[in-house]
Amino acid sequence: MYDFKDNELEEKFFQSIENSDIQHIKGSIKRLDGVVINLDESNLLNDIWYDSQCTENEEIFNFGEMYVGSAEIKAILSGENINLIRGGELKLYFKTDAVEKWIPLGVWDIVSAEYKSGNIFSIKGYDHLNRLNAPITDDTIGAIFMKSVLRQVSKDAGVEFAQTIEEIQQVAGSSVDIINGSWATHFLDTCWNEVKAIAQFLGCFAFANREGKIEFRRFGTNSVMTIPAEKRFSAKISDYQYSVKGISYTDEFGQTVPHVNDEGTCVLGFSENKYIWGTRKNPDTAYGDVLKRIAYAVGCYSNQSIRNTWTPGTIEYYGNPALDVGDMIKFSSKINDRNVTLKFLITHITWRFRGSQTLISGGVPESVATISGSSGGASVGTVTSYTTINSVNNISVIELKKYTGEVFSTERFVAKTGFSSTRETWIFLDCTFILSGNGLVSASIWLNGIAQTLRPKITLHDGEFSTLHFSFTTKISGGRHNIQIGVRGNADISDIQAFLWGQEVSEESPEITSDNDYIYTKNNGDTIVRAYIGKSVFPSIPDDLGGGKTKIIEKNSFSESEIEKVYIPDGVTTIR
Image (cartoon, rainbow, N blue to C red; front, side, top):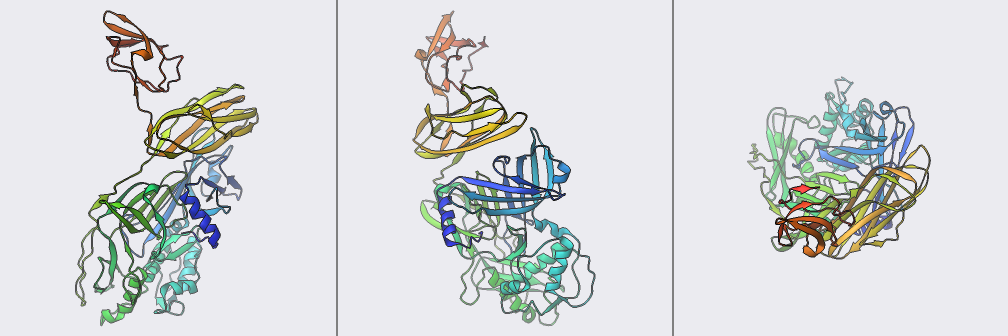
């Protein structure tokens, strides 16, 4: 979880997340020539996401793993050179309406930049952990200190570490001296393998934090927040809870030594780590203290420590961009008609701006392995069964019908939709227009024929494309509704993105209509529809009108109505 370093600010943020407040985003692109392009909601489109996942297997929990983050944005960048953007640096920040401070989302090296259309660029980046694929250039043979390894990795990969060697010592605990001890006789081949070896030795995982620095972190034992049922889109949770039963290590001579407790469900293993000195004589004695320390770091029983227990599964919900991989959260729900609260260890996280967030809690390795050694055997558990969570409140998204082109001084509706809600709920409307023209242009929102107070405006200048973006949130009752967006002013709309979000809402389904909703004539037993005079915005034309089969529809039958769509029965043969 992002460290707010301010209790009042943190409290405001969590209250804002609980209220589903609108999220905002900004950032920057630093080009190869050092020029900085500022990004905000005027040139950033809403299709923004970031992802942080284990490079080995996102569905499996283990210590010593490496977590690479990626991000992708779409932005309007007029006259920019792709070759100067590709290889540059992307930074993003977010906040909510109730929070004054911009919170860092991450830093990414831009690996691709593609031109789409209308000055829109698609840009993707990977965080600085990806830089660790660089080779180690030092081939020294002799005593090597861990702080020397950190310096060499920083030099060869061009990265910074978030922690000093003294802070890493605190992570390792007092049972081992990593500052003064010489830990190897040579460097490994890549920076990646060096960092992975350190993470294994510490019982941690490695990732690039929100400032782009490489950080070692333990998996959380304390829950940072609770996600209630009404905040999620969907979820599947394992039938079983897991905790670490022990750690095993296989040395360079092939001897496997486990540190296993009587309680727990899975044993995690690693092998051939350069920071653990090998011995043929008594591996149990040589590795025992190291394995106990690592077991404690990943939540295994040690003295009076709390066991790190979690339930694997997947949750999709409204979203909290301040969450990080390694956080422990609580998941409140009803499983098999029982109210339960489960602990959920985040091992993969994906967030979409103003959209859903997916959290994955990894299980234990799928293959069942037997650990051999003088201390006896133990088995690795498996994740095989999932229970579907009951009482799901689904968040749905509906795309509005869009009508681009010219608008004038009189208002014209440029986006609209009909929808239904099963109960009282909140809805969230998000719209982005790409416009050109001259002078003041204003938009209006109409819900069920009533103009809303929000009226976003923008001043256009000749020869330039501009972006008008606005959001609207309100509570609606259950039943049928319609929403329309009007625009007035001298302008041309080249692109519209308009989406409606809500719990248990759906696009308007066809509404059955009757003979009285149509003007029609009959000819030899066939009915010809001449005009529609009903009130439904999504009428379903009956198979039979006036005692005859509906066969022909005049093409101007709906020209004087407010319909959005119409359902035409299979028996219709002609529209003329």
